[in-house]
Structure formats: structure tokens, C-alpha cells
Image 1 (spheres, helix red, strand yellow):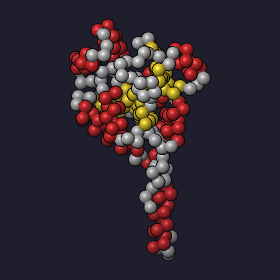
Image 2 (tube, rainbow, N blue to C red):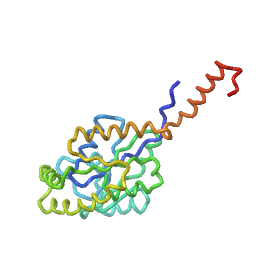
Image 3 (cartoon, rainbow, N blue to C red):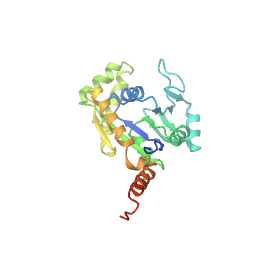
Image 4 (cartoon, rainbow, N blue to C red):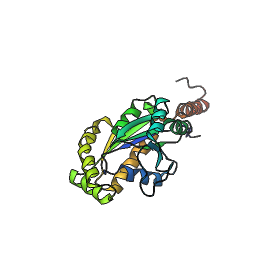
Length: 221
């Protein structure tokens, strides 16, 4: 019998400066592996056209958000461009217990808090870099979601965000989205197969040794 597939779920963190591709990669990974559970963040920013409460985000007032933080209901939280963002802890803990991996599309501040939490041993963190700063700005403008003022603010913040790349387990340069996705898939496959993430492996090896003993009952080695 092969080792048990039962294991604690992973917390997979994707971070990048705005426009470098973490949200696109998150969507592609969800399509590749439907068992991945996307961590839906709470935010105080207004919904964008086409966004639905509980799907892209849980949209909260500032008073609702701060009450959740005070009650210890947030795994991580931060203020970004004048709005608050955070990850409700309950759904993440439930997914881990059930052996389901959770995907986080969060910035370096949120990633740092998760990596410093009591769940840090189950974290796999990946930072996505753009191929160039010119390309990063071009991607922001191509999205056509923000004003020039907002884009300028995001570009000004990107240098600070990129400075945190060395805090992550893995770093990927997103020059080609298909290649970047393949690299993230490789990371996830390897992390899921780590020895300490296969709880049934010790029992499996003991079973192999019992087979040896049965074949060679007089062998005391």
C-alpha cells in the first residue's frame, strides 16, 4: 500500500508589485488544480465593476474590518493605498485541517504576517518579479482599471515592494506567463512531496521492513 495522501494543507503565498502578474497566475493555478482553495480577502475598498461580495473580496466597512482585527479573526491585514485588506482566519484553518491547499494573492506585508504566524511551517511563499520596470508600467496601463494618479502611486510603491523579494522561499521573473505558471506548478508539486509533508510515510517504510522480515525470518540485520 502506498503512503497515505492525508496531509495538512499548504498556505501558498503569491506576492508581487501591482501589475507583475500574481493575480493572473493565481487564476491559472486554480484552473490547473481545482482542489486549490482561493483565500478570499476582506477589504474596505469599493467594489470594481463586475466584482461580487464573497467572490473577489468580502467588502467591509472600516468599522466592520477593525472589529474583525480586534477579535483576532484576521490571519493578516494591512493598509494599501488608503484601504484595508486582510485574510479571515477561519476558512484558512478549516481548509488546512481538511488537507486542502489555500492560495493567497497578497502583498509583502500580508505575506510577512502569515510567515510569522503560528501557521508558518505550512507556508510556501513565492515572489513574482516583472522583467523590467518599463514592462511593469505598461501592464498597469493596459489593464485600464486605474487613473494616471493611481498608476503613479502604484509605480512609486513598487520599488519598496520589490525590495522584499529575498524574504520569500522562491522568486520567479514573469517574462512569459506560460513559463511562469509552469515554474509555480513545479514548486507546488515538489513542496507537496516533501518528506515532512507525507504523514503516512513512516508507517509505509515500517511495512516495507516487515516484508523484508517475512521474506528472511532468520535475518537479524
